[in-house]
Structures are given as structure tokens and as C-alpha cells.
Image (cartoon, rainbow, N blue to C red; front, side, top):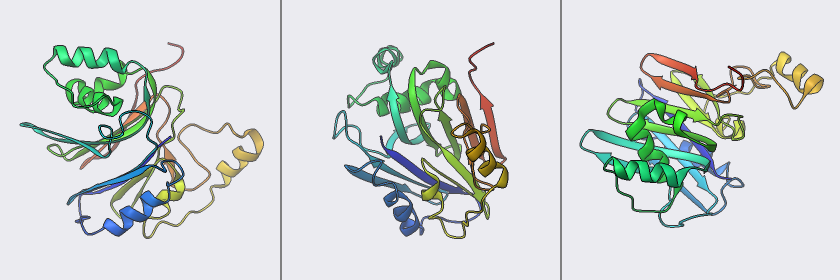
Length: 228
């Protein structure tokens, strides 16, 4: 299943927030009982809990790729069904691979396609990729929202995770019930208004959508819909 967490802050150095990152990541232990990993620098912290299915050594996360034009880091939950096809396309475009994991394929596909990567994916997924050169976070969720991905902004910090309980582990986060959300839960649950949750100011990345967070704020876009 796997779980991912992270936070980005452009106004404060978060490199000393390792304990916070560890607590958030540990809260997702049941999603990924086999392995955990961390990435942290001045502006960003990423954590991952892994359920190992394919390539125990080659699929470790957060996964980092460094090129002459920048560093990219991914945390990811899901399965890319067309990973082999994408791998062949990327090889034809000069990429080489060190593992059999679809994590490496997804990360290098993002390096190659940029935001358009979502239009080349067949699978179930929720992932976040940090572009160190641009100081920008890219997140996306699969077409039908099979894999969860939540976020909030608190005190100039963008915080996200596979589960809301991990977001609640971040200091100063207080969960407050959203009356409309609770009403939907009891009235039409498990259905709910896309993008909203039962907690105030806690949002989900909508199905078939991607989100970019940078110095200009949050930008969301829908990349696919069932009926045109």
C-alpha cells in the first residue's frame, strides 16, 4: 500500500524538523510496514513508509535523481500498469535504469515529460515530486482517486500526506470538524464533495488532478475527465 508525507516552507528552514518528519512518517506504519525513508533540506521534508512488492533494493524511497540541470526527489504510493512501455520510451530518449521498480520509471518520466507526465500514466497512484532547481513541489492523484492524498497550509507551511492523521502530527495543526463534511458523511457517505474532507482547512487532491506548490502558492489542474 505505502504511505507518503511531507512539508514545504519557503520562509523557514525546516532542516531541523527531522523529529516532526519522523513522527509523521511513523504514523503511517501500517501502510508500509517493511521500510521507511526520509529526505530533508532547507525548504522541504519528505517521508515514506513502504510495503515491498517489487525490487526491495531498487525501489527505496524517497528516490533521488540528480542531473546537470537539477535534483528530483519522489515519494509515491501506487502501481503504474504501463511502466514497461514507459521504460522503453524513456530508454529511446536516453534514460538508463538501475532498478526494476515503477518508482524509478515514474520519476524519470516526470523528468522527461514534466507536468504532462499525468497524461502518460495508466495506473493507480498518489505521488509528490520535489524539483530542487525550481524549488517546486508537484503532486498528482490517479484518474478515479483510488490512492488518497491530503494537504493543508498552516503558518506558511504546505503539509501533505496519504492520511489526515499524519498531517495532524505536524505542530500547531488542530483538527476541527467541518459541519458540511460531517453532514455529507452521514447523509451520502462514503460519497463526498470532491476536494473536501470532514475537517476544516484539510483538503484532498481531487481525482484526475495535479497540484503544484511554489512561491506563488497552490495551483491545481484537472488532467482528465470521464465524459468530455
